[in-house]
Image (cartoon, rainbow, N blue to C red; front, side, top):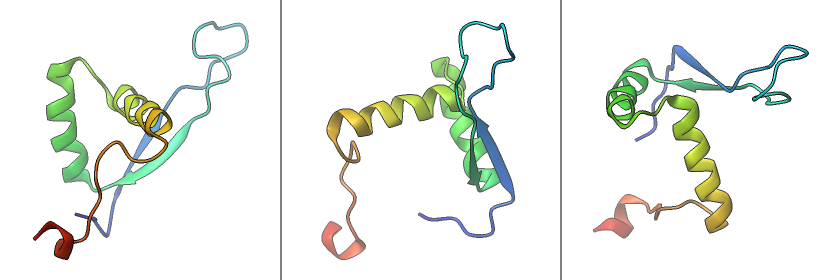
Length: 80
């Protein structure tokens, strides 16, 4: 389901300050999400020990590995 009228933005990643280690040179990405979708997703992710950054990273690595979406995407007619 696509959500319209999103009023929430999620910032993915951290920008390290000069001299910091770890996430240096990691770009920050902003996504617009429906607030309810974000809250529901976090309720699923937190018990798994994941935050939004970790979940998006896992998803994007799967996209690269599969050379496409890691699941089928079909319209309503194709599902019936």
